[in-house]
Image 1 (tube, rainbow, N blue to C red):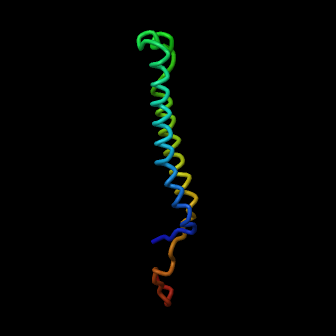
Image 2: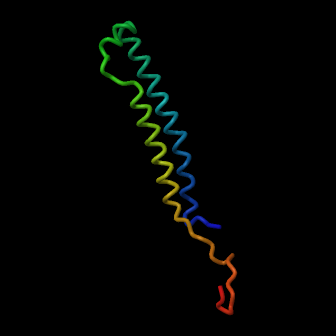
Image 3: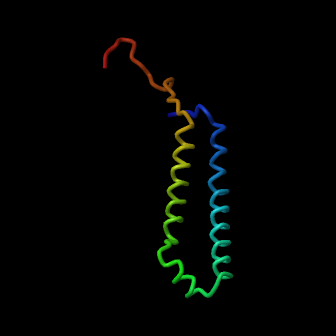
Length: 91
């Protein structure tokens, strides 16, 4: 088994839902602002070269990277005491 050297870093996983809430509110505010800007058909023609999927994919990749970064910073220590060794030296 393994133990974690820095268990206090587990609290950083609470940032992931916080960032999800902030990103979703940002997207909804952006959509609301575009609706105020003009009719939907006109706005789609004005922003024809803009991708609305790329920022979502980028955000998802950044959250996955953040999770891996937090998990990697835990500093896993392998518990060596559970292994039994033979005193005779045979395999």
